[in-house]
Length: 608
Image (cartoon, rainbow, N blue to C red):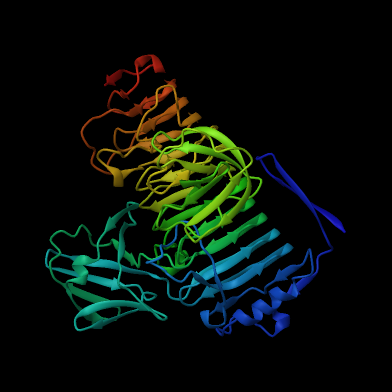
């Protein structure tokens, strides 16, 4: 036996575990060679099974290409947060290429191998695994569920576009139909990519859907119709996908000590790499971006990494997110609404968002907080002694003490055991029409030395809500330092294009109560193209200090001059010591608070 000890540089995180001497299980020992383009799924699963009772084993691939097909894939039902409703996807069966269940002390060594998936699949699943590492792997899809075409000619009556060779289509009765292995498209979600400027904006397939399509050259189509309202320009790449999240890019469930290292996700179908009720997750040198040689611009169908109900330490370091149809990183818990007091110590709960349900969100021994939905105020704590699923939408939990008085309609439970600390360091976020990073966790958060380049919405969003997505919870210790923000927020202009938004959805401000606390935004570089920098609501002990703010010219048109800071119902705010190299005088707008709540060297306007 030997001890494997890992120290994550710069994080202070140390974990160790005992493993047996490494035994290498070579995939090619199971009659599987790379670069045959035949279905590798069954033999890879045989090699995985051979590692089952060998703690410390290394599952090793020879370099080269391995193809995975849905026919021989593992089929298993999983309910995954933020994916699909009962009507969108009634059958939650996932089609899984590499399936790992109840493994301990396993390394998957890819040696640079490329895993190519055919059809709509979940690339891998780690289910109830401990001390598992995947490294040096490239993942791609033969026919991505994202279709792409480069605009060549655009007029009010006609568009000519070059279809990417990976985007299969057929023209039937004058209409272009996108299709792939056993799928077509009826729902269309479109993003227009100006790759030269790095600007990604929402668009619409409707004018193409209503037009007449004709192939005029190999992979070149002329669309004739009404394009008078279409915003595309020659050179832009039009990207379109179905809106249904029937799979996940990868799924990590009820695992502990998971390391992903040097993983290149060239394309993922579904929500992205989803980690759900897992702990100690360490992701390093992850590329979620297309292969530069592929000519494609999109790498994900939706999010890049999604963390729901996790705990312990999450670290994301030295990674690159480029070309996503949704948020690169989202970390949150889930508020469940209290629907009934069944007994003095028993309450019934319900999943409220249509795309999040079906998984156990509370466990015996968990600590919880009762939350007023309108104010997001936690008003009582408790501990769970028993929890069970009643249906896919409902849970029943038993508490160690009586249910508190004062519950009102809409109140929620938040699980405060399953909340992680987070470190995001030395990463790049770019080529995305949505946010860069979403954070809602009450444990320590460090976001430092990253580059946020032209994210379409807020580079960083700190939310918390119990009325829309029901994503919990409040933050209590956040450091945002040493980052560069350039040209962010353009898809939210002109009213909400702040680089950073602290935006809890408390629909009632409660005097003396702050949802979020202790957020320090220090020593960052902001290269802004418009006036807004920071908006914050219901935040205590907020500081914006020693930052450098400069003006980006010749990027996007500016709106009317307006405050750089919009603060609503905050207290203990400091906005001082920042360096401004901009052609305007930055202003601070206060709403539902007085000038006594802020210390600043900038002009302040107080609005009732």
